Amino acid sequence: MNAQPNANLFSRLFDRLKDGAKIAIETADGAIISYSDLVAQAGRMANYLVSRGVKPGDRVAAQTEKSVAALVLYLATVRAGAVFLPLNTAYTLNELDYFIGDAEPSLVVCDPSKQAGIAALADKIGAKVDTVDSNSKGSLSDGAAKQSADFATVKRANDDLAAILYTSGTTGRSKGAMLTHDNLASNSLSLVEYWRFTNKDVLIHALPIYHTHGLFVASNVTLFARASMIFLPKLDPELIIKLMARATVLMGVPTFYTRLLASPNLTKESTRHMRLFISGSAPLLAETHREWSARTGHAVLERYGMTETNMNTSNPYDGERVPGAVGFPLPGVSVRVTDPESGKELAREEIGMIEVKGPNVFKGYWRMPEKTATEFRPDGFFITGDLGKIDAQGYTHIVGRGKDLVISGGFNVYPKEVESEIDAIPGVTESAVIGLPHADFGEGVTAVVVNSKEAKLDEAAVMKALDGRLAKFKMPKRVIFVDDLPRNTMGKVQKNVLRETYKGLYGK
Ligand code: AMP
Image (cartoon, rainbow, N blue to C red; front, side):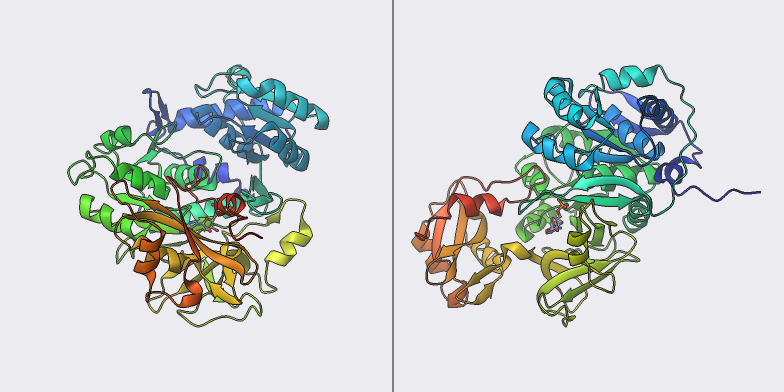
């Protein structure tokens, strides 16, 4: 009699592995890991986790540099029925204290250089600590090497947790998004089809693996497709351009594309072997999209997702990839735009709150049932916090995070609209529009602008260029010039940092 299939993501990935000799991962220093190797390493590591007392449902936290062992740790944790909890490498001990205390993992894995500090935090909740470094060396790998490669993948249901990812938490406390086995598997399988991944693909993987983009989108999609990935520790534009001669897909945040465009070696010829360039995690400037097309002949495919929902929408594989738009809902995903106050669905072209529903949407915030309840509508739609619209052709557009909306003199000002006008001024590289406390207006629209190297624009020149292009209430009250916008590792402009830096600008 056939047993029920195991919904464990690991089983769905590897139970029917046929071509084990196929390359799964290649590292920058030339190490090759086949699919059979990967499954065997995950078996050894899963046995080691069990020997360390990790039980199904337990959390395994990892603040590790990018390495093959770190990816194997993710797969092994899931295989053992435990819950993987990756942590941004930039988090300080003070921040880790909160995450570890909140998630109560039974094992914490960290870089050897951080062992002493983390051990003190782990001790408080009785968690064990192991280490692994960027070369896959440490007590974790040493322990796993002594174990058998055979491991019976722990049975899980669709709805069981596979991972908890803490949101970046730019306002208030960071929340743990609980992702199930089916959230991850269904979304990756959908993307494999939508983006036409096959076992002929070679992905350039230069994203961090503590975030949904590099961990789930890049790695799971590659593994489900039996494609290969070239694992790079970080963004290295010249190396990436060199690798394009034998790769087929790049997934990046917008910064990847601007940094690559800065190299004269990015040409039609150097990208000839590539079939797909994907961007997400932050808005890709329409200008970057156009420049990329002109230089390489490839239209970047932009998609939209978030930690809580995996991927929601994508520009089409065939058909027009519209600059500045994030495309159509993925199969099985419903997207709607609503009035933020009443929750009533809005018509096409009207700006409101983006809400999504589907098998991709997370189960809720870890140990925050009240917070979870307020983020879902009664009919199951998740309120993303992103403001946007669906245009007449059905493409979704994002105009910014709800919390970045500027309300000046009682009027809503969508930063993206003002930024697009500023970015169109010759000499402007990019801009960020924020609201700052203002005695008369509540918030004053404020533009933070990066000039191109040659440009010598000043505040008056920007104001003059905008005159007549924007309604008066949308006009910036002040323009500030900076060399660079503050960004996090995923390329997102940190508007909270700008708001904090300039909060006294209007003397309030
Ligand atoms: P994270 O949870 O770190 O992946 O951040 C998710 C947020 O990033 C979303 O809620 C959006 O605000 C933003 N985001 C992701 N993809 C895009 C995109 N293609 N364009 C604009 N914003 C995006």
